[in-house]
Amino acid sequence: MKKSRKKKWKWTSLAIFISDNSAVMCEVLRACMNGYFKNYHTLRAVKTVLIVASNPNASSIKKALEMGFPEENIVVINPEKFGCPEAFGKKILCECGKRKVDIILSLRFKPIIPTNVIDAYQSMIFGLHAAPLDGKRPGFRGKGMYGLALQHAVLHFSKSVARFKMTEVCIHRVTEKVGCGAVVGKRLVEIWPTDTARTLAARLLPFAQNLVVEILLLLSEFGYLKELRHRTWLIHSKEKMPLKRAKAAGRRVFPNG
Image (cartoon, rainbow, N blue to C red; front, top):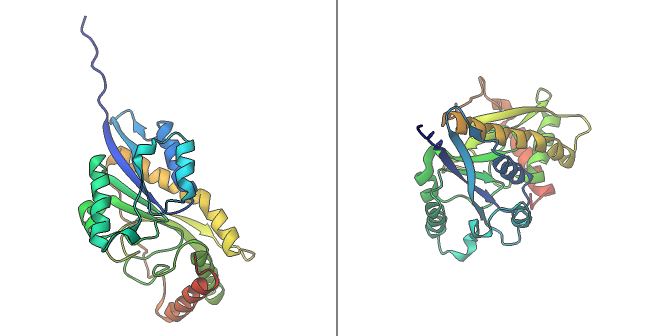
């Protein structure tokens, strides 16, 4: 009687970049550990093999360890300890290379990802952004646009522009120009009249968690992602100045994001 051959999985290795607390990271690790990213028809699957933290005191490091993630696969790489972005990038690439990383997922990673890392991973490095993006066209990107500063900017703009009553969480390709990469997944979320930066951020979180898991599941099933685009410009020409003021307000009220 012939012995049945053991199924051979085609693993896609994931690296997660973080700088502080990331509930989304925890959701991804939980999904990996529970086998959620295993496709038994195609024998494709995603596993997290590396966590890169730019901050040694990031609370996500402790959370990952508590969830059973191997300590040897959590690496702190502080950009301030390198003389230039290229050296910072070489260290990142070294750690990714050791673990044969296929995909990079940036979750509130505060340092600008070096060009040599972006070039090495091209279309397989993704970032999560908790506000609408529109490629190279005007959107909620740029200096200081993360955390509560980002949500304050969204609310400020919504009050200035009557038509703007929906926001988004989206996943985009990371490119050399921050926030300009193609969007590959998004969730629309209504802005409530009573929203504050904190309440809006809290309501966006479960949408972000579900979106990231869904995107990784699609990658495990098909190995590629369809790029999305707004049919019309997200920000109209007359709204560029209100957008600029909204971003400035966000940075002023929440200078640390």
